[in-house]
Amino acid sequence: MFTISTTLWALDITDFLRGLHKILILTDGTTTQRNADYLIELNPRVIVQTTLFSIEYLIGDGVVVWRACALWGYSKKIMFLPILLLSAAAILITFFVGCLGVHDWTYIAGEPETCYDSYISIFFLSIATNLLATSLIATKAWMHHRLLLSASVEKTTRVLKVLILLVESGFIYLLIWAAKSMSVFGDLSSTVNGQFAVSMLNSMGNQIVGLYPTLLVVLVHMQHTAINVDLESFPNRVPDMSDHDKRAAEEGLIFSNPSDTSTTMGWPINLTLSNGPH
Image 1 (cartoon, rainbow, N blue to C red):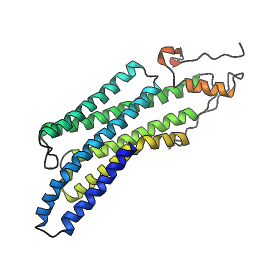
Image 2 (cartoon, rainbow, N blue to C red):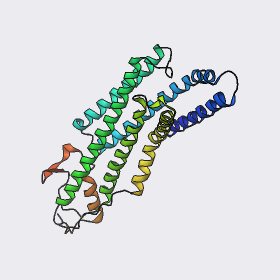
Image 3 (cartoon, helix red, strand yellow):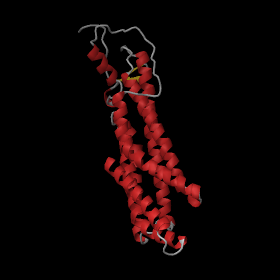
């Protein structure tokens, strides 16, 4: 994804410099003619950029879905809908590229309505996929918080901080993605200011979608979060457990296989806590 993001960045720079040279520096013909010639030259690059970006955010959505499914122990019931949305987006991306090919790769001048509708559908599917995955992670964080309040485990915050970070980053990513999606609706690019806004949103989206998984790994490692999680201290009801066992127990509350769980206080928990040595 970093390679794709870097390639898109290089193409953005190329588009800017070529446009500057073709329209403002050259003096052949009128400005309108030079602009029309530049759009013809730009069309193939924009198609490449659109295709690369579609692949990039499909991989990004896959990372988000994988992250959510891993937290839910790869439960088939949980995985079904996110994977269905992800598969539908992959099919539509393939259809979109094929549609452009069938219609002589016309994009900037106005792609056919069928191609446009498929591209809009891809945006909606991506937003739905991210919203669903982030909601699943938020639900897991809430369940884990409830479990910490009821289970006989020392109340450490390391795992909960990471979960809240995943939720925060997911919603921030979703908001940025939704803002970028606005560029494909209505007549936003019909004015000079609108064209500038679309260009900025597209460039920003290209980089964020590519860097998001890497940034997420770094942030989780640093365990930074914008929310100050301060769990109340409760008496430890299992004094004979070692620190290693307590940490393993806490992590087990999250990264568990649902099929191996029992029920405590109405919430799944995959371990049995003892009050002393066996």
